[in-house]
Every structure is written in C-alpha cells, then in structure tokens.
Image (tube, rainbow, N blue to C red; front, side, top):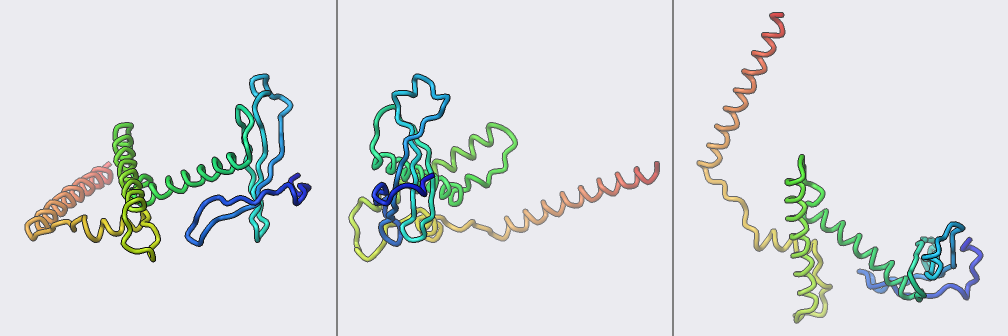
Length: 195
C-alpha cells in the first residue's frame, strides 16, 4: 500500500539524537477509516504512519488516531517518545532488577516492583541532573544509567562485610539444616521400603 506513495509525499524528519548522531528517517502517512467507525470518531484523525529507513529502505508502520486535526511532525514526536519510554523501561528491568523478583503474592510483588521503580527513578534523575549541571569536559558523552550503576557499585556501595565469625556461623547453620533434611529423607525412604 505504501509502496505506491510518491517520493514527494515522504517527509524527512529527525527523530532524536543517538550515540552516533541524529537519527533521521523518511515519514509518510495515509488517511484510513474503518468501515465500522462510530460517530464519535468521525471528527478525529485516523492515519497510518510509515517510517522508512533512509539507507536500507526498511519500513515500520504505526496506526494513529487523534481526536482532532494533527500534524505529521507531532505524530512523529509522539511515536519517538513511545520508543524512549520502552527503552527506559528495558533499562529499568535490566539495571534495577525489575524482572528478577520471584514473588508469590501481591504484597511481595508490590514491594519488589516499588523498590525497583524507585531505583530506576533515582538513576534517571541523577543522569538528568548530570546532563543539566555544569560539565567539566566537552569531550564526554552524557552520563547514562548503566554507567551510573557501574560508578555506584565501584565508588558508593560498599562490599558486604564477611568476618570470620559470620562465615563460620553460616557454614554451621547450613550444614545443620542439610543434616536434618538428609535424616528426614532417609526416614521417609525407610518407611516407604517397609510397606
């Protein structure tokens, strides 16, 4: 369908700044309206937005609806904001452990998620604060959340203290519970064999 779009209908727009510079794509849109559109949606704008990579020609499609008239540049900004939100969520999962909680009930899930999201918010605010604050070198890229986590681990968070008494106590406790578990299993096997 969008292969038939004439070259003059594609609009060249920048979508943000990446690590390698400005990301630029060609954009086009087509008005679409489903046959079963309700009267409330009649006044709105329903379009199919296409993004074409400038060098590979790869196409991506986005179906959009707005309650009133809207410009293509505004739709592109919203589409790019969605990508930024998804990328930030992936960072939150990876660097604050949002995807590593093993939960069995609502309370534990809520606590784990809350602490993970608070940690992600602190990282994001610290990274933004570094970007807007005074910079001491123009040759550095802005601080990112992964780099901030690495710095926190190296400079702020202390290593756990494992003194000799703690290690010996843990070993004794662990071996004691293993012996109790072994005795229980052996007793159960003897009872099964006696039947």
